[in-house]
Image 1 (cartoon, chains in turn green, cyan):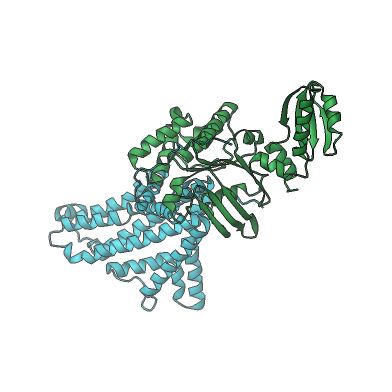
Image 2 (tube, rainbow over the protein chains, first blue to last red):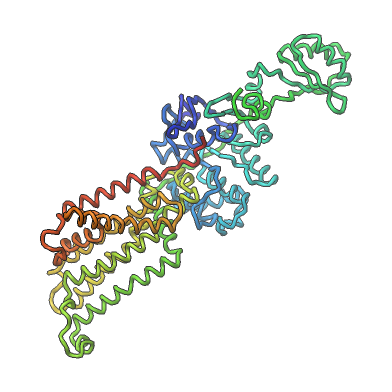
Length: 313
Length: 293
């Protein structure tokens, strides 16, 4: 079995409305985050991935499977939808248990798996209550429990952190990281870019139905060559460091850190920058404490590639 | 980059056949049907004619009881237990089936659409056809309780109560009851589900199901009157079904000579209506969540 989620030149149109256009992706195991503004096509991409909608053109395979073989496909895919929607009148337990029965899992196994997934999201005590009486956070958790209950190898989570309080959010992120480390595919869409940064192995940036960038966050950042990279250097003589850096023409901006113990430097050639910094450190005139990228994160990439108005630049 | 331990294990246990999963949705549906007090009330009321007909059969087969009730006078001709008697029973129960279908069908589909529950349900190994089939089974089972099941129970009771060997001689009536009721509730179920899938408000869906039966009947009546043709009756579902039931049960045809519609035309009309309904369901039952421009 292939271990990748593969999109080959996939387009989806809803009548005349563009969902996604000519997307080609190959997603390996680990945590992949879909980032893009509202209406960018993230949910369409997830619906395509989970076989809920068929592409207008192109081909999709998930671990070498297609939705044509529904049992095999859906036993490997778990989907946590974005919308707060449930079949009416069910308790948390019924929702998970009946979902497992729909997967074709025997009653005895379904019983055990239901309990396991509810415990995993810490909803065991509330499982007998109607979902209608759950808080937003509990409803988000029960959707997550439903998605992981049948032990899928691919977990597709559409805005899974919405409505969660900080503690529940941290717990969910820890769960995602754990599943990702275990070799599961997690495809997550999120607007919370700080958290995307923390857990993602790679990002897929999409806007207006078009793929803007994909890959490891640092690699993507390095590919954005028209936006000079910003590096924070903490040292004992930040002014001297800034002046030495400005002696070379790839350094375009310097800004002192608020505490006066560091400087933000912006450079158009990161390789030359680090090479120069090595030389300065060896000279010994400036005692360098730390060097860290300051805009090498999902938020910066989002701003550079998509911008605040949601259109790719 | 994460370090993968690759110790995650997918479920590898035994899975049940695909067709049994449809029954999970049917169970959902039946639970939804019985969760409504109105449904229970309607079912209870639908038993009243059944009891009346049961008493009728009892009186027809018990001379002493009949003598006490009629005080010695001759019973009315309609009192005979024959195809016409069961036709009347089937007609009565079919009206109840229509009322129940218009109440239940929207609960089965409209709620899922209004709650946007289809993406969650369809992200399981169950197709859109399987989803509709599950709902259909629930509705068919519910309507069976007020149509062919009580009808055949009455037939069996008549067979048991009759002094002469009645049941074997009248088996075509039983077959007609079963076929007539099944045709009607299959048609009602498909119609109810299709119309419910286009309306997110349950009350409106209920009204539309009634309208779908009676408005074309009115239009057909007007067309027949203006064009002086019998074919307008093909839009009149109650008349069409009564004709069909008469033929299936072997009861006298109530239509004037020359006004009768051929059985093939009735069947073709019902099949065409079912295909239209299936097209409507195919159009609406989709997992797509929100389309943003």
